[in-house]
Image (tube, rainbow, N blue to C red; front, side, top):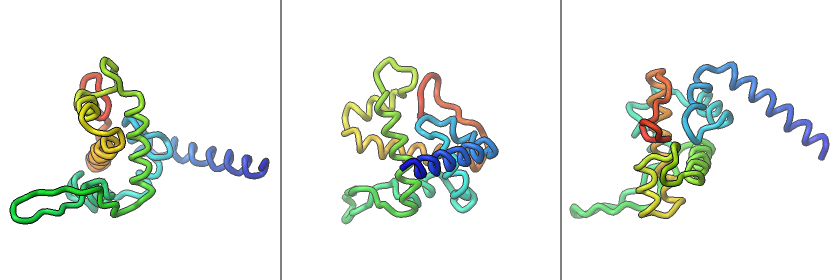
Length: 157
């Protein structure tokens, strides 16, 4: 156990060094719900030029609902779970962390997220927030701009 703890500590130290050395990773870490591990993973695995929009990126990750539509009637199912499972998992876990601290009157919670939490289950809201975070990440990587949340609200860009 002691050897495993030392190995984990060494890996964490190396990962933090890589995060500090990567400008893109540090840029992405400013988004609420994205920490150093998620930011570094996204920076290393994603080429924003491969996607035409944030919507296509979120669909590639599998954060969009499957569509079962016919005869002009739109029916949406669960998420498609396409793409990279690890990236999708990191975004959903980060979204759950944001939701955990989302309270009315909080500086970190957007009105959109609070309204969504009032009418939908927490896990469904987490997937919707992860979808939004994926679109924000793509836009930041494609343009090189820093995260700019709406006035006093997290994850509402």
